[in-house]
Image (tube, rainbow, N blue to C red; front, side, top):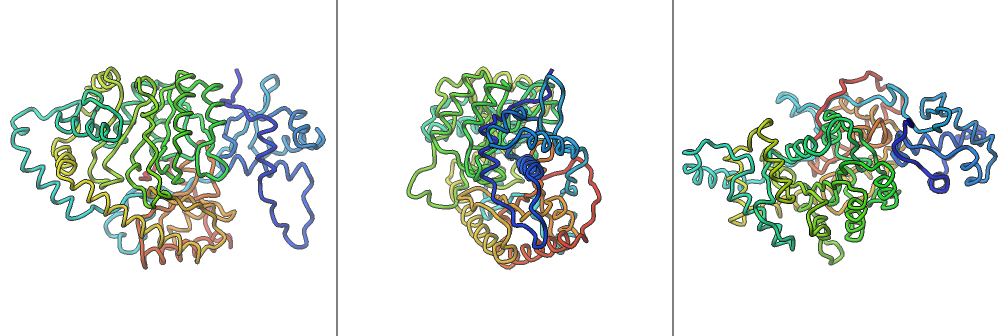
Length: 502
């Protein structure tokens, strides 16, 4: 049985290699031989996630024809990649991409900072803002006033409080997606929703297609559920989906689930347009794949989208409700400490999720459900989210300016929404940067956290959680960390494999 989960055609690989920017030669050095340049180009595509790990590469003769080089050049390049651990081969099965065991080094764990470190360490590990006041306090007070009738019950509501399910259904209906409360299950955050979905739909060994890069915590949740992750690279500019790749993976790998963040993707900030949403739903339906759409960032549009409205939700292109499951949350738009999430799906799917929940967490805290319902009913939610957008926009602009000033060689695309900036680190190891950052007082998650099997070593994720002078200082500390890595002074210790990145 072949070890690969997707395939890269010769014309596609040739285009990707030819699109790479030429590297400036170091003065006094010779140009590398053709096979070495080809091997380096393929290795970079793997490390940046442009070519997924475990993707089947073209046969030597096919790639030689596509690149107009000799077969000997391709054979030598493949042999070099095998020697370095970036390619595996087996007679009769072909060759597929890999990442060497233990390389790249993972970044150090990002467990929450202890209180005594809050004053000295700038924490860029969590893409979450402080609570929006006075709305958090008002929401809690409103919830306490409405609590007494519920306190006389057992308090277990596996599907969620009826009043909140109705509220969430009405909000989808107002967005043009007719929804009944029977189509809603309230969960303990979006992670609780994804955990329930994975256990119901993706048993151990099932394939799940994921964007590459994708949200680190969800990837880890899926791994621990025993899923086989099939990465689908974003477009070359990391600004949108590559629909050709999505159609190919859904057709060839036939995954049971596909997980996407269509609205201000975490970590790249990409926003899928309506045509891409329609095409993805059609491709998933044709492949028999359940499409899970994470909307946790959907309300965090930070700029005027050239006078255009936000694209319709992905579930708008699945009127029968047979293909798309939608996950939402209060954690990003309101506050991460408000652990309320939800699933919108067909009523029979909701019933199955609720039935399975009896063996998990039983239900979501009543007081927090009442708080979110109060905020949404009174208009406080919209006012709090508007404040959120203003804070995130100011922080984004301050962080972008600071990074451009302190680290001009870093490259990034400025997203128009969400909470994260995905930065290419000028050829430096993101894992080394994360380690050096701890030494100079800034915590930052490295790119491999957001990839599958070690991709994106040349990236870090920067959240819009600090602004003003703190953003300036964070960028200055990142520049200091970069200098440590460049000088070779950064250490090389490995970390525990489990960590927390919000």
